[in-house]
Picture 1 (tube, rainbow, N blue to C red):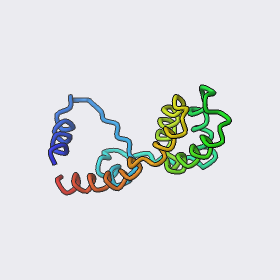
Picture 2: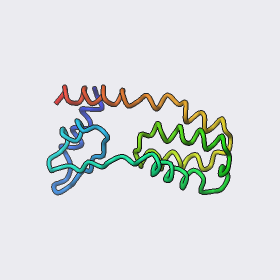
Picture 3: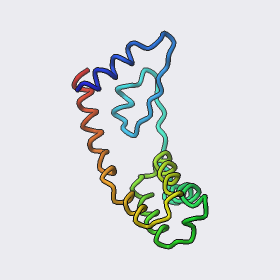
Length: 129
């Protein structure tokens, strides 16, 4: 794949002393990229995930107390799998969305299915090394 070649070229041609920080949910990526020991972060518990989401999604007070938004929000949080960055980012976006249809669009988005695609892309990178 063209993008994998470009990525490898960019990483090889960095300035002397440059450092790259790689974040990933896939242990396989960490092993491929790691030149030093890597840090495994645990996922948030369900309660902590919901707490973080509420702090972001209901920060403006627009959606607070809306039972439908809370129900949909809890389903979205489950799909985030305890990953703080995903929960924070999606909550931050939804705090400006007051229509239930917008929340449902996020919950039902096909983007949730991209995790498998990411694993396939990783296999391509590994095969091309």
